[in-house]
Amino acid sequence: MKRIKFNQDIRPLSEFRANTAALIEQVRSTKRPMVITQHGKSSAVILDVQEYESLIEKIELLQEIQIAESQLQQGLGIEHDEAKKQTLSRLRKKK
Image: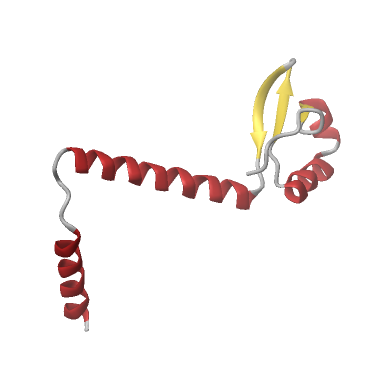
């Protein structure tokens, strides 16, 4: 995801209401998030759908890595040769 440009990507709710289509198009074309403010404070963030999906995929991958690292620290891992053997065995059973 591209970094936010503070002078372009922070807009008050009143401006967003008045220019919704144009501001959504800005988010789509720049691939940058937009912060919507209400009463001078950040209230919401608008993201392009593809950028959002990419962000979720990255979070899920990081969570899986954390789980795997935790399992390895607990001694729950298996050696590469054993993993390869198990995988090949499963693939042969499917044929």
